Image (cartoon, rainbow, N blue to C red):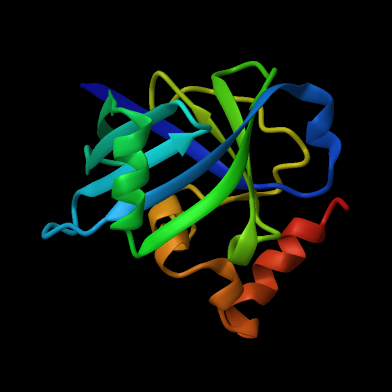
Length: 171
């Protein structure tokens, strides 16, 4: 079992492109659960890589994470069972202070761009890039599971407005 500790931020502008190390496309879906505390995710990356992930709260910004590789054909079949899905392109970033990734959401979640940094400790110091003007750590509406079931594009104008402004701050 791994403990996932991460902070998340809305991204503004395109300055992040200067620190991209790699990129990968993901289709992911969320399987129905009887427990609201658990998240079950299936993720497919291209035609050959796939994972099944279970996440449970562990206090604060930490979550217990159990992730297992599965056959891509199984992931495709499981994705067909998911009502809640999303598509995104993930970029690995060369930044200090933790493992940084950035997700550019597609479809009904566009134009959301969210950066996250995985930390070893919840109180770990990390330098936040200027293009991450708004922290959204712990905001349930911005979790991937929530965006899969209630996409940003389906939010009301009033719900979207403050976040669109934050995303345009540095543009």
